[in-house]
Length: 289
Length: 87
Image 1 (cartoon, rainbow over the protein chains, first blue to last red):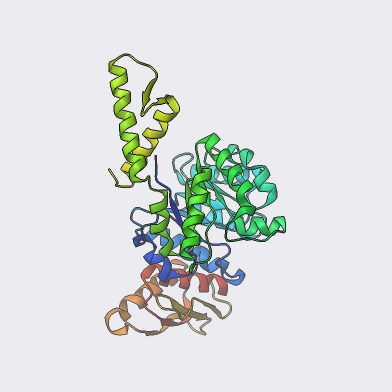
Image 2: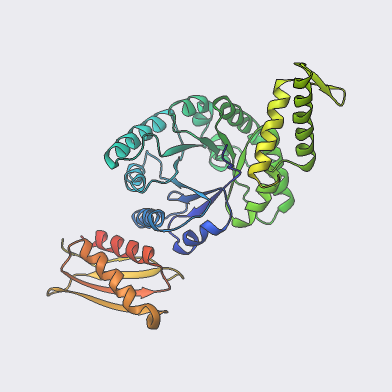
């Protein structure tokens, strides 16, 4: 299990921000060649990001590069240039099943040519169109490289012709659909960023809402958001204590030869034990145990 | 390779370097550098620029560089971008 609670976007043409990204504590850093880069600077950012990955230490953060859409002139150039320096993964905007298959194919050829291990470079489809959302299951299924899905609510709501709200009711369906499809393949479901940096309470509520639906992490657009995301996604003290008691009760039951047992008057069976085990594993990785 | 036209890359923001490359009439690599860390790192920055130019097998070029504290990876990137834009 790898913790991927936060994925921080860093503009791909800003050397100052790129070289400091590793000390910010995000689980993943997304070096962005798409929206954060002007059309006239795409070549420049691509070279800068390639050299940054080759040279800089990003400490414990994994490096993901958001390339340009494959429907533009820049997308394939980005893959060719960036794959050579082995980022952990590529984030594919406005993903379709065909895009993921095409990326998988190009990466396979590059890996063979460069002598890299097969399937070394992973993929994160970015779901931000109605078409992509309705196909999310097949998009994940399109390649073994897919390690998670990122939901992009700004573009998605624009595509749907609806307004974004603070409460996010309009993306309830999208979050459920992405979370469920991701769980089906045991990959991460990363929630859309919260864009109002001055609304702390709204931000916390937004993360809680996403977590309660089954999203496993959240994208961040500012380093200030990282600690809050980690706090909300960390198991609570009560959850950890309960999980420990479940595991202890399970051991006792095993000794006594019982299959199903009860704790605090409630039946405990396999799914509850599995959940307790997941919570303890997350707690360990978060440094809470 | 030959530099055929004037091309620019980079910005004046801190940690970046602004590069202008242009054709030079005769052979040689001419570097005009301004830097906020000229005293300590001027020679090293010039060497990084020169090495990057040489990796493209360019023998005649004039480079104007305005450095705002760029690290090596940024210097190499901006010079490479400007050269590719000038070919």
